[in-house]
Length: 310
Length: 281
Figure 1 (cartoon, chains in turn blue, yellow):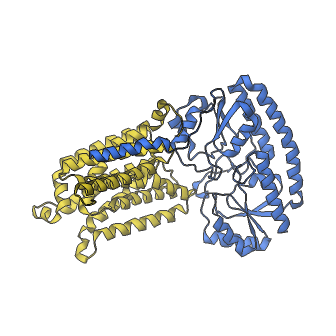
Figure 2: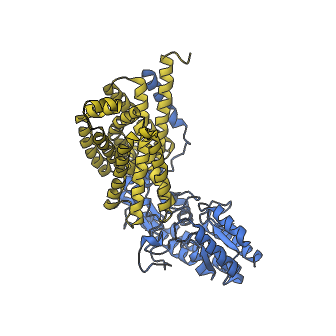
């Protein structure tokens, strides 16, 4: 038994050296935590040199479901600011983490808490709520960052909150916001131009996560592979999707990294369609670290595929 | 390794630590019975039935945290307990009880998959039920369960002689006039309560690990019920500490880290015992 204890203690003593060493950020930076990498990218653009930004979810992770790990609680415990998507996107995993983190600076309603969905014109707000309709968000579809008009509102709100939490850097936040909005205007016009030829084109998505993009650029989501949001694709539903795609000549299927690409490939084989990797989080594909680069990549991927399959 | 002061680490890990020190002792005791009876997978089967009950509640439109879903889960698990106490005599038909338990497990598991295919986010819910959420356990979770476990420990303590006799030699117990089937049902029913309560915070994997690993280690190291119980508790506590520490230091999912620490404990004990018996030299 004593030998055992020694062995276990020896093993335990080795542990701290096994993890990757992470230098603590300089103390004066504002600790900003975003639930997802896309919000983190926006926070970096506005906060610039005055902030240290961390995202809780990995870019490849489904933002509806994030696994709890001790580091997430620690990160939340140290945060000066928390930016969440809101509209119930993080409903399944954030509340228990916040309870464990016990941090008043990021409590709901405080300047340190930003809910990105505030003020956004939400799509698909249900008129009645019923769990049998699938994972319906009672506040509407929470995947709203692919519409540049919504991003305008989100970054403006982030800049306001940052200035409240860190008044000393308010001028910097204001300048960064101004630059961001100027760039956004130019970029949004370019995206509009690139997708203009495909007005009315039909696409199929895995989940209802491209409705804002479709609405902005007048594309039509003909079908989703999920029969209802969050429900696994069933054979009967996929047969119906294949029928629709053949009848309406839909040739493009959009998937994100955490969705089942095999399902999409099966349908694509039957319908002469192409499966497009369209990660909505920055950093999944190379050179997509910022919101602008990410949207450039998504718009270009989509436009190219729609052109080829016309 | 994150540079965090002890305060933060303590704040994050204190309730998981409390849960992992206070709750497993009863599981270790039950584990000793399970090892004696050679019904190792009874816990997995009951845990899976508890999960099946939760899924029925989800289908009916309740959420995981609603009280009603807990009661449905308990009811389904009780049905399993009744089945296992009734199927004890299945050996007469040349069917080992372990077969009944294994079949219950796979059918319940498949049933869960069927039901969850109709529930939004079902796949994630499934993973969640396997791995649990011991990291986000609250003071209330721990307190509630500790209270229930104390009551159950009292129950098992009061009737330990009966339970021990039946687990060790059911035929001899029946010969002394004990109503084996009734006591069996009581045993499995109390077992079901423990599993249902523990699975909801710890998940199926961690529950199974706490139940079996310390018991198996202690059977190798000690002979009497009392000493096995003490050794088992010590091993459960030590594995929990190592697992929790690794989870924090290396940022692993907490429940899975503890399960792996339990596995490591078993390896070390096996090596230690073999050395003592001179088998490895």
